Amino acid sequence: MKKIQIISILLFITIVLNAQYQVGQKTITYTDPARNNREIETIIYYPSNTGGVDAAIAIGQFPVIVFGHGFSMADETLYQYLWDGIVKEGYICLFPLTEGGGMFNPPNHEQFGLDLKFLNLQIKSEGMNSSSFFYQKVSNKTAIMGHSMGGKATYIASANNSDITTVISLTAALGDPPIGSGYDAMGLSVPFVIVPTLVIDAEFDCVVPAEEGHQIIYNNLTTDCRNYVNILGGGHCYMASGSSVCEQGEGWLGGNCTSDFTITREEQNQIVLEIILPYFEFMLKDVAIAEDEFLAYITESTEVTYLRDCQLPDPQIEDIDVYNAVENITVPFGSTENTAISQLAQSITISDNGGENHLVNLDWTVASYNGNVPAIYVGTGTFNLPAGVVQTSPPTTLNVTATITVQDFVSAPEFTPGGEFTIYPNPANDLIFYEVDNVNSQEIIRFYSIYGELIKQVKITEKGSINISELSSGIYFIKFRERFIKLSVE
Image 1 (cartoon, rainbow, N blue to C red):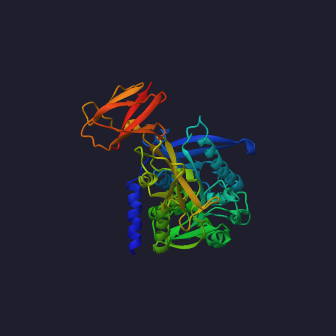
Image 2: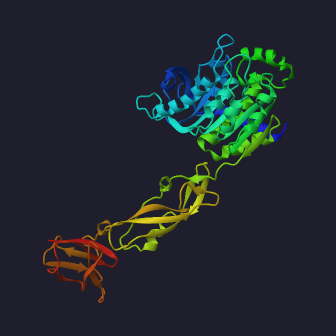
């Protein structure tokens, strides 16, 4: 067994053991007014801190996966491993119970596909409805996924559908069986899927003929990102957690090929999770490293074979405002522009929509800066986008901002009587008196306005008075030996 298999198993165990959430469950019947008020009873699994029926939903926003069941498999327990594996990692899963009839109540494949499409939009609207249980809990990233007949419905729901992020099918049965209403999904739907798609197959699929699914689906996809993964030694019905009428179909349609299987149902369930969990993390949560995990598994594991043709667009910076997290600063009165700029962040980390971080250097400018005027100034940091990253609209040179507050004089330590320099009275009118310790013969004191303008300067002795009658009423600052006193003139 290759090293990658051991790593994959450890990764799977880590994912399961470190799952953040329990599984909450709620059943809601939605009505689609566009189809004669068709009722769609839906079991919804969601992240919860406690788990159970109608448990409180966890804090956060979660991507959504709408799942279509197989023929006569509208039993939520048949896919329990998916709810346990996916929901605990922070996803909402919808499982409609429609079109679950059997031979004597054949399913309508097109209507089932429209159910999945409707639920994708419905759950998004629930996230914006303040009276909904799912208000502000639904992220804008969603997927449609299905098994067997539900795989076919997945492609019907996904054709020309830009309201979803990705598509996954599990041994999709796209042909027209002798029972049920047919629909040419291979011709009418598959070529028109416009989002990244993952086709998961099983080596021993006795239900779906090779010419009606399998790699033919992958070949007919025209999306810019298509993936095909074939689980070696697995079977069609092993995509479910337990046996059902599906196994009878394996015998009726293709002869009992279960003797050819080289893996167990539990092993196939685990492989499915090893494939889809990192895929969802990348596609629905923008975790860049998860794409590497997905690719490492499908390319190196001996448990699967794969095909891949994927040209995802360059990572994009969609809204530069979210990268303005530069710390604002306060500088002392009299600080030069260079001093102020040196205290600002010289680089920041930005994230693209693929979840990858990029360190960019900042080139700062501060408009109309005057360190001798207490005020708030806006610094603009300019940076160029990293190679391989584009913005949704020009320009490719982007900015962040920070505020620079020049302190008022009053924020500087004031002198007290008995110190090296004392003035009185304060407030004053026509005269102020001063005393100085150890004065030099050439020392002067300077008077500034609150705007930093030099008003007057006076040579001083050890003690004396200064005529300030020419000063208008207001606040001034006296500077002596690089220190300041605030003076009120009445």
